[in-house]
Image (cartoon, rainbow, N blue to C red; front, side, top):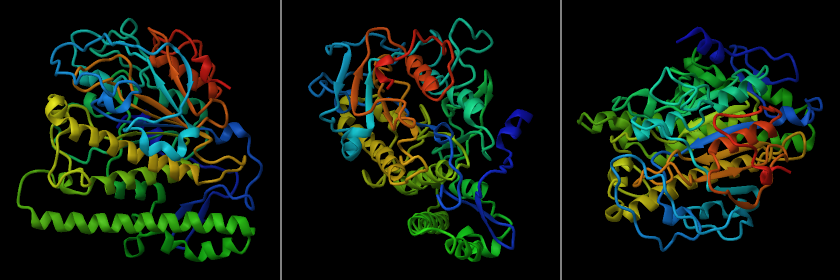
Length: 459
């Protein structure tokens, strides 16, 4: 690992408000915001940025308004289709009716914004899937990056982390839900966060390792669960809290305990599988996918809630990785998302279910964040820019136009919500990233090939 990467990973000291429960064994458990223990914090210090990346694009007729009756596209195996029919006039519309794929967000409809019509620049002559993942957040353009076959430079999350990472223990947190270890593809297909051209920000994939990284209990094998280790300090802290804070603390503490129980169950299931399935296929392919994603999402929420980090990315799955995953609520056998996307007419219903499956995970995470109250009277979701998106507009056509983008939360009131913004022809995904930077107080003149701010999003 490079020195820069190691510096980004190394926990930092924070001399502000009390942030941790401690045990005599030295374990620490980060605390959420509690009014009884905290000084008044500037609202800007509560802002977070989080990315929820979905691979392979989506089935357009399930995700996009007005496309339910569109023809089911056939596979385009060559260059991406850079043309798309746009019947909706550019403008801002109320987000009144969600499409079938978006339906899991219904209870949060007033706190999300659907953004359509955003395009990305594709560099001809290189693999479609490699660019759509690795360059999703890139600050580079094909003209400015000459040392790489991909227009890849320092990514949005790293640039924002330079600005708001501050003295958080992790200036940025990179998570990946690719639990396979077969290395079917190169790093370009399996990472969205980069320190710079050719310098990947290594992602963490094992929930146990992430838990130990956040809570530091790996040296306490006899009592490895942090809630057991810090119980005495927790009881002492509770006596100092107001009634409201006691409820807030208990909810948080119980939530971490539930997470620990899920991790124990995953360990048990992993051991059972390793003994029951005498095949070479990766064991993770047979793990319950919904449980794995839910635990990863919980870990990301806890890290944001406790201030361990203010910038986090999660890649829900790799691009063009044909090793199958077991979508446990959809099928009794592992499915290849990428493989099915190449024959959308045949696998239409399964692909729609996979899209819905991913949206359910996003909606569950957003709802969890919205249940957490913070110092400024808003929720964790309100204070966060949580973006769902993919680097392809459709997995079958491989189009880089009209990408599926949803932003949940308002960044502490800086962005409008409850809208459908349909952008004018030629609008860039980088316009959204530039707008998010400005809402977080980072007033860059330009980001990648952006043409300007999406002013209709700003409050």
